[in-house]
Length: 208
Image 1 (cartoon, one colour):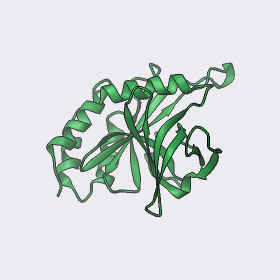
Image 2 (spheres, rainbow, N blue to C red; image 1 turned 90 degrees about the vertical axis):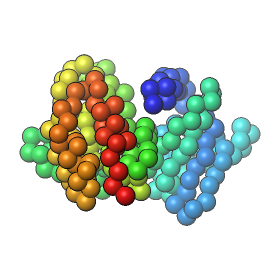
Image 3 (cartoon, rainbow, N blue to C red; image 1 turned 45 degrees about the horizontal axis):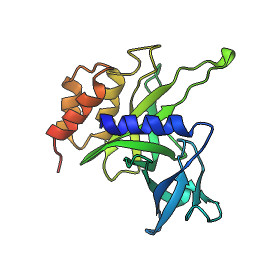
């Protein structure tokens, strides 16, 4: 998992300002596939830039026509992006909110359950400064949405949404799987270890 994470970070760094094409297999909502080259998508991209080969014309495929993209990096590393809805929670009120549009998630774990990540490059402008961060979401393997778990927030707010939010969202998402919701409720999450903690819970507890 750590290796795949480092591969993706390297790809993100190498494609900033260059928007390189990577080998990719696009999975369409109608069950068909397109194999060729595609640019790496950001979470809110409404279209995917694709071409069948180096000499082909470029086409823009609406994200809504796709379910996932499997990329192969220059070093041979493979990672998957899925187009899913997200459920978040207001940090102050705790109220849940379901997105009206889908987002592209990097899938960092998938078995009976899955974990998706959205990377925010941040903003270095003085009046709108925002540190780079990653938000992690989780849910069932076959779901069309993931619920918010926690946000790393760089080194700015180390404890943001790590423990209470994770437990609150788990009660909603795994209401029909008490093994998971109870295991998450009992755990004391630490920001630097939380990804390993939640994957360990998913590995040890089955609901089928």
